[in-house]
Length: 232
Image (cartoon, rainbow, N blue to C red; front, top):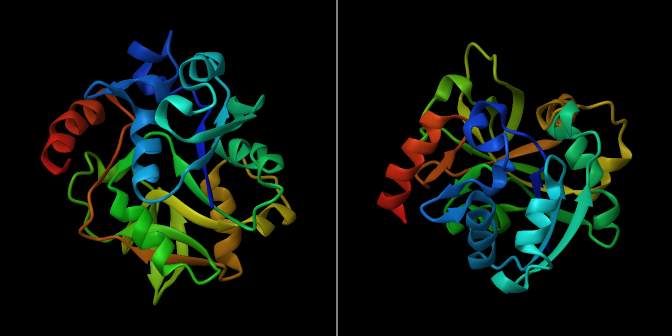
């Protein structure tokens, strides 16, 4: 199984770095965010990756190349529409998945333990699945996170603005390739997931108790440096 990593966005809230560096290349404890994601997936048994690039993408390609330096295989998908949102990056990965029925989807700014991926894969029953956390331990700012409402194992609502919610979207998915055959006006991954939710096609994998963090702001980055040292 391949993992698609969305690494095309600019990360404007981290402009101190991203004015000259793509967000996935920001270092956390000496390693780029993207390297943390790849090595975590590798530890969980994933060795093939599709990295979707956009803003300053050549810097990522120059550093990562074909993945040999991390003992993995890396292919690339270019998203020329990256300013429109990360949903366009997911769509850009379609051609690179022509031989795959299922794939892992990960944000490049979500750092998590290998057990998150293992639990996701172990729980997979062929349905589109999202990792959710009812009580995130290390998340710096819940208000800015995408939230979900659940009914049993299914996601019934998803979005940042939910007034009541059951869990947080942890940004790691296991998806069916046939989601690309559905109508695609979606600029954000959350919009695409909302489309699946309408037809009861998105399940939840509960990762409550497992460590993960999201890095969107300078405050998040500082918090990540502290918390990652605790659970790594």
